[in-house]
Image (cartoon, rainbow, N blue to C red):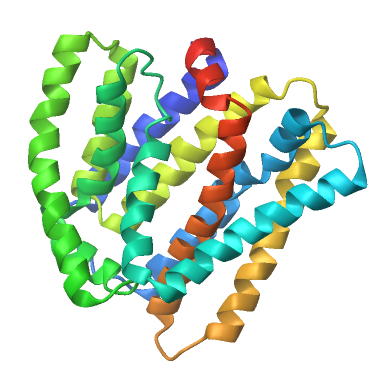
Length: 293
């Protein structure tokens, strides 16, 4: 394992275990301060990894002309707007599909080449494990995005999925002989989502594992670009996302501060995740990362 990736792995494991242990048993009720901290971390440490999509697209589609850039950016924005429209029209269907797509997308974080079942189990564990201990808080969280009845049903289903996944992951460890590093990463992330309050668990995972790992891998995958290209790609799109988020919040603001923030975070991430995953798939990034690391 490359030393940069090793450092990121150690950081993610340490952050996950530390937060899980320090926050276990404390009041998990959502409050404005927690949401603002989570939003700040996601924007500063999480969103920039998706900003590199412009470099992935430039390398994959050979975007050297203005017309090609306009076409790509137009398709990217249209796909994001379609996700937002789907949420407004069919929030329940949107949310269920988003959870499933997120599990599949997150499953690429850890190098589990040749262990597809374990890989998917890890991805779905991220989505389902919070329901075991913090089911009530997770229901309240989902209830800010979809109606309360559907939120309860989703949490109940994910709870049963978790009860199956925990022993299943242990069995797969033994059968597939997964290396110690991967075991530590999967175990620490699982403990984080089991013990920490859901919004905090997602924030730590998204910033220190998902986003950080993507940035490290991208550094090697996009090795033909100069450092200033990375800096511009990380900063400019991130600022654009922040401005769009502030605009939407101003336009949509209601008396429910927490509900507004939750919807902006989750719907905004969904709107960015779909085109982001599409760009990475076209670039064969996941296949490259699996072979290279």
